[in-house]
Length: 260
Image 1 (cartoon, rainbow, N blue to C red):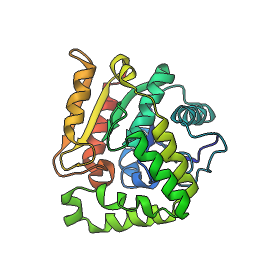
Image 2: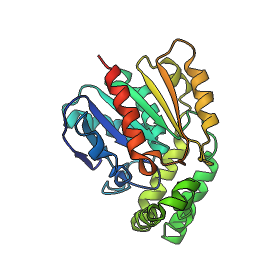
Image 3: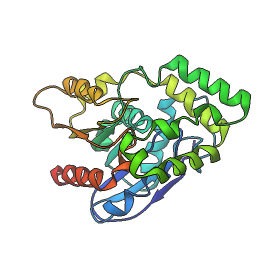
């Protein structure tokens, strides 16, 4: 499995950005320019999405994680900070379970280690079947609305159109593959609890899909004494880097400053 990726260059620690479903790495276009002076920024399209081909292998989040490790190997990156939003967060936690030594720190945004809503396995399998049956991404079109908070809908209406274009352009076969990989994901609570590097839990106060209370629950899993920060952005929904890139960039810079 080969994943399309872009090494945007920059100086400092490697920073890998993993996007939400059913989008692609373009959701980070507003964030990347704000961080290239602080990190070597790498964006990756998840399997079957963006410019990544639909894998021939059976859908699996572990396989996707191994493909991300292959990208790190190709770029000669020994250790990286990984920022994952929503499904990208599931993948980041799979990496923490699979290769914790390759991760310098984690930013887990609008995500959860548990196999629960908004991505319950049976629901994701039904979505995959529906997408294939229709040969269309229409079954996930609501993601364009659901991904944004009320403030973004009011003040940045162009973002909704941008998301809709991305979803409309997505390969239905790739969307179905990734939906099944989401259904296949493991519970990664142990990986969250035992990861020894710094962790930022990033949530939007206006997120109705994965509310900030999930961040509080994940903070409890990390436990007292862990290098963990819960950041809740007040006027954002599910897609914080898209809705509030400057605020997210500042949070990432603070994290990078903690690294040895």
